[in-house]
Amino acid sequence: MRVRQATLVAIVSCAVMGIAACTVVPPAPDASARTPAPAPASAAAATVSTSEPAPAAFPQGAFTLSGEMTQGGWLRGTAPVGTTALTLNGEPVPLAPDGQFLAAFDRDSGPVATLMAERSDGSRITKPLAISPRDWRIERINAARRSGGPSETFMKRRMPELEAINASRAKVTDAQGWRQDFIWPVKARISGLFGSQRIYRGEPGSYHSGIDIAPGAGAAYVAPADGVVVLAVDDFSLEGKLLIIDHGMGLNSAFLHSQQLFVKEGDHVKQGQRIGLVGSSGRATGPHLHWSLKWHEARLDPLLFTGPMAD
Ligand SMILES: [Zn+2]
Image: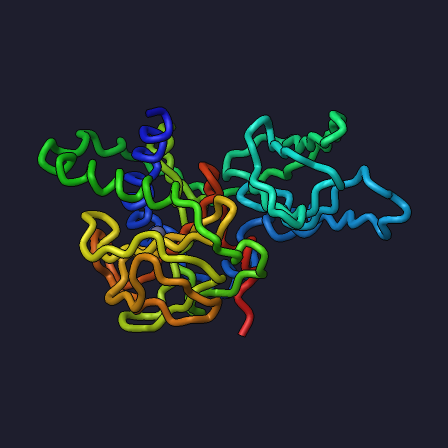
């Protein structure tokens, strides 16, 4: 129940904020792509590559880690030999049969995260990780936040939609996309950054839960990584044509506002495969692709998975 409530708030605000952010965030396409504030710098600085050289040097006791150790970022690695269970801040982290795993850090993650491996011999290996803060784009508005919640009629339609979204994200598939380096679904002007937020006379609004890309209506977009389609629907009230793809290990992508979808639930998609056309279905002020990434309950910055948008 707790999970459902949290997701409800997040999803509602996501779509609502998505609209706001699309108009709020100044275009500056290249600049924004290259420099979402100091993020890449700190992200780069925080990038770890503590690959323990040879198994001979550390026969059993070490994690091998690489990734973006910052808010909204991620970590991929290999657990110490003999690991039977892995946790991040006490929460279970799925472990592949080959010992590989993925973990990620929410937009509002604290400065320290702790990985812990439990091994078959009963020993535990703990690894504290420093998670660098981000400088999120904040816009202060000298106006009251719009009051009045959603109407009863709206919520009647909305609740089953949220349940479908939650159920799809909870599906476990054999997708292996989590092992890949992600690519951009489509390259164009970035019209909204992940994490940006409006503050209304001191009262924070919801933050933007994905990245907005605006190539124009009808532009094709592709799967950023391999996956399995866990939701493909036509007319959700906020998201319009909504596609959710599971990349495995708790990582999934959502694509909002499409004009057309080329895949259906249960389809396996390959990285680079055309999966839809950009549109403005649902609640959107103009055609754009809103792409959001989640790992379990953590909301992540797609930019940290793809890297800057180069030609
Ligand atoms: Zn958006």
